[in-house]
Image (cartoon, rainbow, N blue to C red; front, side):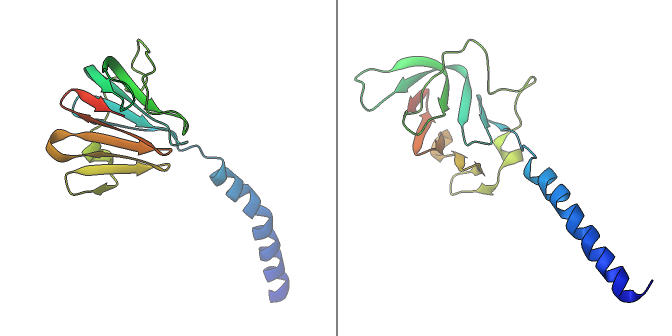
Length: 149
């Protein structure tokens, strides 16, 4: 077989294999990233949804309500809703045995501590032990037993 024929066969074989290789990569679902910050266990899904379970009940304060109320979790799952509780009795954002620390999954370090950016969302440790997440144009911050959303 001459050199030109071998090159043609190699090009055709590569062209035939490329769609198979690329489709396998494109269909891979990276899944959620789990992490913890103190007693807060969180997950960021591949669609950018952020949810957190709290180790103890926290007060949720909205700027449009005159009073806080107690919650055990919070989620940002819609761009048209503020961060909100799901009032689930379980721990949807906590792995069995607990989540790895934010330090072990961080994608960078900010002025006050580690942060993770994934699927268009960002969660970070903040000043004096605060913790915040932003996603889908919404955000929440937890500090000293109170969440502001």
